[in-house]
Length: 206
Image 1 (cartoon, rainbow, N blue to C red):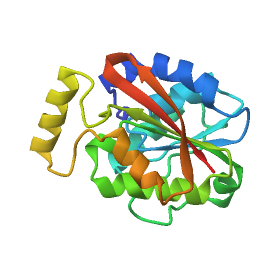
Image 2 (image 1 turned 135 degrees about the horizontal axis):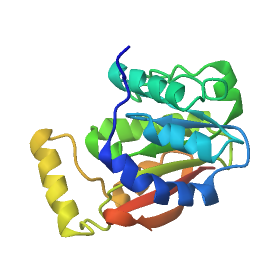
Image 3 (image 1 turned 120 degrees about the horizontal axis):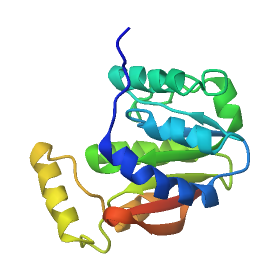
């Protein structure tokens, strides 16, 4: 059989600092839903690091789903970690099994908002507000503008390259996220600077 695991270089670089911060943010029990899990490298790393939680990966891309499943098998996590869900954040309601939705205690989304149209951000926030229990976090990681300004020259260049590839993509402004929250029962409770000019934004279900 061919190895279907994908390897994303950024995942290897950022999983340690993301995991260190998650250790301070995640609940002590329940299920964490990860949106846009990509290769699955983050998912199996965090399932191993937080064995008291169930880490539910998801991705709309069949190749990514196959990679996640292959990583789960490679890491011998098949008995504790569920197979990935085929979730496209724009297709609502999300197809969550009852066992997952009833135990949902947090959501994590790493590097999605800037490589998707704005409607994806809106859908993500709205579904998180619908599905998360009160006090549960939605944790967003990636590059963000602040007060209409990029935080580094590299982020500005990255934003320009994204918009050249797709006019609907681009580094989002934290102020725009705050505007979306005005009509959604989520509130920002944290904003953490991360390596490589990234940010982790922590929202909480009101």
